[in-house]
Amino acid sequence: MTLEDRLQRLEALEDIRQLKHRYLNACDLKDVESIRDCFAEGEILIDYGPVGLFKDRDSFVGLFQEMACHDHVIDLHHGANPEIEVEGDKAFARWALYYFNINGDTGATRQLGGFYQDEYHFIDGLWKIVKTVFHAHSINQ
Image 1 (cartoon, rainbow, N blue to C red):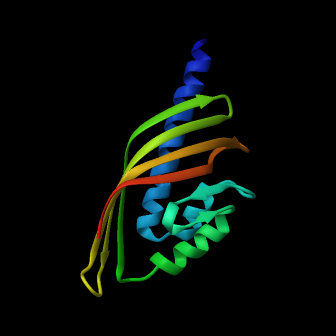
Image 2 (cartoon, rainbow, N blue to C red):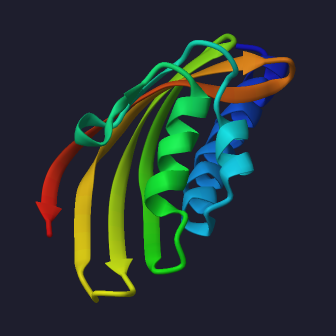
Image 3 (cartoon, rainbow, N blue to C red):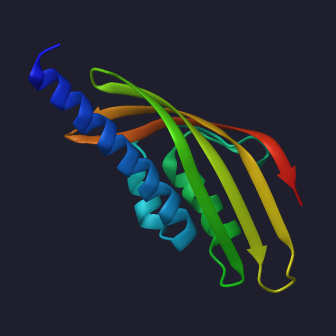
């Protein structure tokens, strides 16, 4: 692997980390335009199990707005332990997630732990999420 290849790989890894962190932070901040921008346009796959299965970014963002964009909903998404493999203009990653939710009106809390399996494509000079599947391994409500 040439020095240029190694540098491109390192840049891709960092860009993908930044993309996932931007997505998680946008969820907590209820920044729906930033959430939408993390995903590729057109047909994609977002499979969040009981939350829903979505084939495009706009249907997911619509549900997110409906469920999370309220002053009394406080979300904390913490993504960690990324394992990222870059293969040209595609990449695949596994991320651990710890999620904590507070309902400010009722005081109810929810905790969730699990893993994202993601696929990314390099589109028009930017990495975008084209597939994300979440598998929960612990839920406390």
